[in-house]
Image (cartoon, rainbow, N blue to C red; front, top):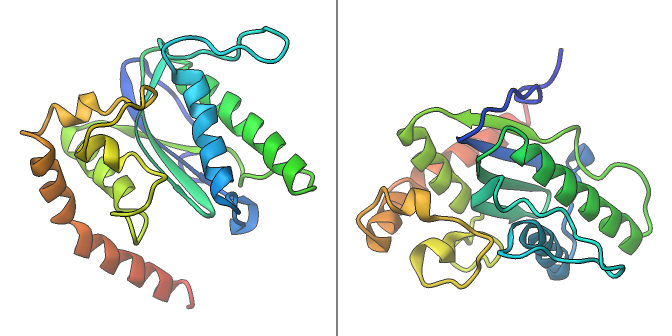
Length: 204
């Protein structure tokens, strides 16, 4: 049987929680520059103007097709919260970013073969409550989330000039950054307890 959330039927004007991890649960980011390269690949596809390669050709430019509303990169996996305008927005973004990142990683670390475990997973977001919960789940993913630079939390809690992140659709559901921060912190202990239980059960 296919894995959970692998078979994807995408709809336009819809939110999705996208996630994937390294093959055999291996790390996909080994140095800080790896995280920033993955972020740059996202930015390349979502910045206000197309970016050209060394031969003057446009890289895949998807700003009118898909948004990244929230994200967090972890040593062996990543989470993205995306809103796609067109039915193929997320597919094109993941194809562009993950293919380019795998090529970068394999060349840098002198390896071959797939980097990610199967295809990325996609969970449709059907309700506002689910949307808000996924955003805080993503931002709380790192145990040191307050200082972790490779997430979109700062784009929610302070001024940010990063144009490839689009937090507006979620931020507009709150009264301000203090309201969002409290909403997130209210769930921190619950999420940490769930993570601890999951790790303990993995030993059985």
